[in-house]
Image 1 (cartoon, rainbow, N blue to C red):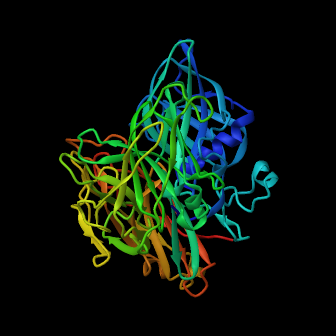
Image 2 (tube, rainbow, N blue to C red):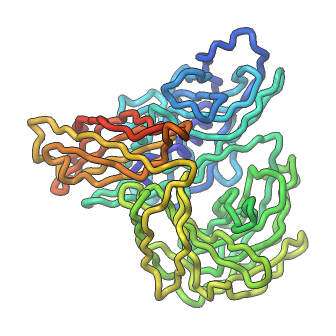
Image 3 (cartoon, rainbow, N blue to C red):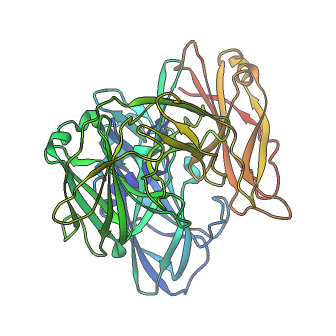
Length: 538
């Protein structure tokens, strides 16, 4: 749950909500809808907690709506709502069921169905917005780690093109749509270490909730376990079966809200039945099945309350897992376990993003224990210990990414904990496309840099990356491959990318340079001639 100090899409949204809690923004309509029947929209932000961080600040500028999921950020037809002044928010104030007051309230939009939202952030190292100055920040977008006084910049690739959220948002005549935009900082902020420098990148994977059609689930773990919250890093996940019934999928996650009582809050949730997965380092995983989320409930108004859950300390320590993927580097690994019995689908126990610039991670802890399972009962939850189909401490690992086919599962256990995933195939009807061009270095900076990476961003998320160590020394060409695109016969609408490059010195890692972002249109063909000149950062 870390990335280059770039708290990407997710962070953006949450901060937005906080920042805009006292203002609605002004509308700048670009689609020529004068005289149309109008409805109203309120947009708030919520988040899942992030382990090891005290603050994740973002500075928000604009909110855009489009009635087409295929619209690129440079195309027409957007309804734009710039804030009167940028707003700086701390995403980590919006976890454990907390919802910001509307960042944008009473936005007027023409009646209809909207399929895309984009949130625009201030550039991280641009002159500080007044709100960032008031918050005492060094950067417009910033991370502060627990027990660390340093301020880390959150660099957001393609920030000016916006963090993209796709969905179906119905605006009705004279009605009001109340949206909560949700990101999962705990999974989507990815830590990267290079040449003695630690950085973070946000790989936002946003979700949204209609607050008029939401429910809440709350509960407690026993206080003996909750006393170890800092080391156990408990995560509580609400899961449901996938549409095809093949696996359980994550709908929402949270941490312990109150270590003194072990209380946790899952809100907002789409009404329905969930299985709750509780995972903590040094504890057996617990699964509580068939827990209802009832429409209209909130964390404080008649939520479903899970009785205190007694967690069992692990007899064996968690074991570390390492993994690499050839392509795309923006993928993530999912670790599943399956309960014994007929027609059981695997549960998603843990998720780990590959380093988006390296395609690797290491030291990721997995439980070597069996699983405790029970069925929801408002009076008491009784757990039974079972060994998963994969064996005690066994998992199946799958690499996955948006618009790619997932990998075949790899078995994981303490003796098979170093995973190598080959390249993922682009999912049909999309086809694999390339972006090529050159990296140009100023004449007076030749030989200053010896490390670099070029990467492609889609909607605020790094999709794939390529090392360009030799090209940043004095310049050179690159080809970035395996990007989802289309053909003339079968276009891929919405295949708009931003291409950026970073360079640094391994001898003096604080010497850094940046190029881009440059647009690349892969809807029908490869993109060539994407040439970028490195600008050295102060």
